[in-house]
Amino acid sequence: MVSKVADPLEAVMGEDWGILKIPASMSGPMIQYVLDLEKKIAGGGGGGSGSSSWTDRMTTAFLARKPQAMAKLIRTGGTSDLRGIRDQMDYLRKEGSVELERSDRYFGFVVDQAAEAEMMTSWQLADAGDGKADRTSHFMVSFPEGTDHSAAYRTGRAWAEEMFASGKYGDHFDYFTAFHTDRAHPHMHIVVNRRGLEEGSWLKVSPRGHFDYDEMRFVQVRVAADHGIELEATPRFARGIEERPYTDCEVQRARREERSPQTRAHDAVSRLRASLAKTLFVRQVRGEAGFIKGEHPNYSLLLRQAAQLIEEGRQLKAAGPAHQAGLKRTFDSGHKFYGELVPANIVTIKEIREMNAAIDARRAAILSNFKKIDAELSSLPEGPDRTRFERLAARTKTEAAQFMADAAELQGFRRPAADKAYQGVTSYDDFTDEISGKAKGLVLDLSRKAGLPPEIIVERYGGDEPVARAVAEGWKQAELQQLSAYYQQTEGLDANASQAKAGTTLETVHAEIRGIYSSARRDIEAYEGRKARLVSSLGTDDDVNDRFAQTVKETLTSLRLRELENGDRQALSSLTQDPDQQSLLARRYLETELADAEGARNGKIELALGKLDRDQQTERAKRAEGAKRRPRRDEDHGR
Image (tube, rainbow, N blue to C red; front, side, top):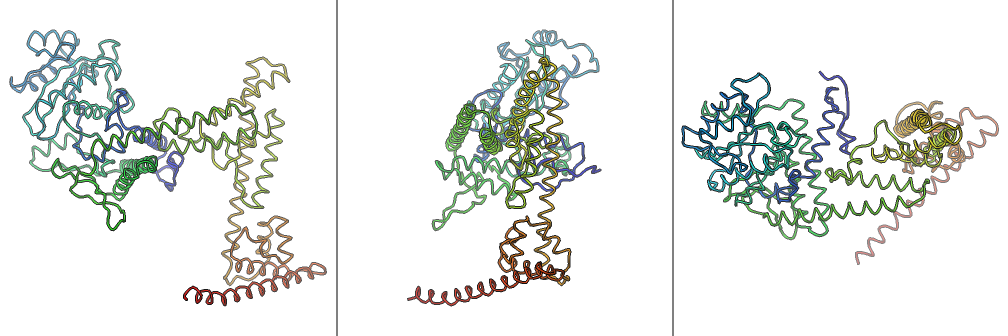
């Protein structure tokens, strides 16, 4: 059941997703999903090992159209006692045709009867399970049809050693392997003791833990390349696939029933997640295409073409070495346009590496520039100018964080501060200048009375959007220190007492300031509503009445109202830029006022109407003269 209307994604995505009706309990998790996904897409893979590969950046790897890596945890494959592990070993041995091999720690020795007994003892497997968690986990890495068996075997062993025995993903874990070739896809089974050898920690596969499902596939791609097997590890949304994947149970059931497996239908949440994933991926690809557009225009074009196809819901497929379906860069009569899915090898791993290098270089340059900006800002004295530059720098960092969500330096700029921290209003004409000025005056007085630097506080609220979380935290910490020092100096409080009082005062002051600017925003919204109603009233059959004139008075400043009552239609330029609409509105207002005007005011309004008439006649004459000259100029050009 939908319990609230929320827009949890607009703030973190920086674009309007409309009003999304989602359960209240899903609001927080959905925002976290977006943040995690942004980080994963921006950073690609390879986080655990620290090495670099052509496939590490998913925003370019998907162009290669290589077969997908397949590494997974078999969810029902764990065991908790001796009987379970022995039954599993018997199955993996395939009636003696397959040898089980221990980890490289034990030199890959074959698991014979003696080794099996020793391993069961060291793994501390009891005769009977205690009903608690499994003591082992069962993984499998699979390879495409036609893969050389020897290369697949070496890759499977290397993958197991990298994931479980290298220590790069937490503790060191013992394991044994079984290599099967009884099906079209050669595959390696890895059974792992979940208790770590050195720290005693438990192995856990989780998107938030050391063992990430995507990372397992990235590692497979890297070690496979060392043995001559070309794979890629891109998620489904990066290949234009929006359907949910098959479950293992469905695959097994379909095999028994000799039919094709069926995908699960999307529910509301999974469909939203799929849509978000595609949108975030497309946005990231386009952002990185912009990074390299100047130095590598062809690569930039290719990335933009790919993003366009995925956005349109086109599926990018890899059909094998002979017929790889991909993007084709087409040049027809010198005109570039978006390609189609055609049988063609159009991008090589070498080109992808070049793209990655260009993107990484651009990212490094951006981060280096931010460091220089930060150094320059820190050298400026405290004051409104420094605050203004800090806000501008934060806005630039927030824009960069959309496409560099994995950059540690930008983590504090990925989301705006909570509670509309430091969100003011922006003025854009005389009327909003008055609203903004009134709000600033109140904030100046409030800050001064609280012992805070008033000009700096006003400048910190100098934008119509909340600042990034990192900036808000820095400003609040500075204010806390200033106010604490103020209380120590003026009231003689000790450090703890002054800190506590400063914290309480800051909460109160900022709550009042938020209220001041919230009221100002409501006034501006009401002003915009009045403007829209006045313009929309043109051409209607409504009688001229006092309410129209009153709305005009509420919408114009006193200066503009005086100009209007002197017959100047441009006093209404904040409502509309159309001269004819200005004249109609001005006439309607003046005629309404004339109906009740007496004495000197009556004469003043009549003079204003007369001026309005003369100005309109002059304007019409100018237009007519311009219309006469235009055909002559056209004739001259034609000669």
